[in-house]
Image (cartoon, rainbow, N blue to C red; front, side):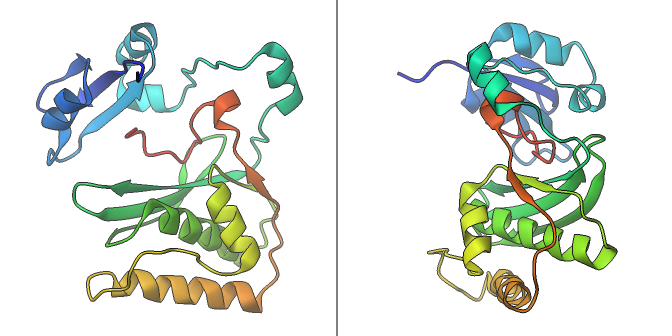
Length: 210
């Protein structure tokens, strides 16, 4: 049986701490500028809601289930880095992705929304966008992603999606083709690192909609 979650809605039709995804969706779906996030406990939700969304995004409110030994083994993230992530709305099929400064969470690039794509495609495109942009800038900082799938596709230099190409997502597949071409004609100069979500919480580039 799934554990209950609590949903903080800072901006929506109904603000506050909601106790079901259905309530959260009713409050935020189609609401311009909706700001919300889920939490495992009411205590964490209350801590988050006690601050503005902007203040909350700059802090870490996170409760790990890992032991002290496991946390020690994993260590802490390198904040002198950038982080990438993607988000895909299953209700309208729109995907977007972004890269941010890991420490400040300041956006470095944002793309989308694009129609007819998957979250994995977004993670792949975000990672390739990051390595290409960093190479162009001569920026050697490591790049974090929480997607092992994206890492494997980048290492293979090929997007392994099963998503069908349609007229609606033609633009997405054009981006995939360009990304694959870049990977096959360039060396990656940045370290690509896995963001340890269980130890560190959501990746700084996360859209905060889970």
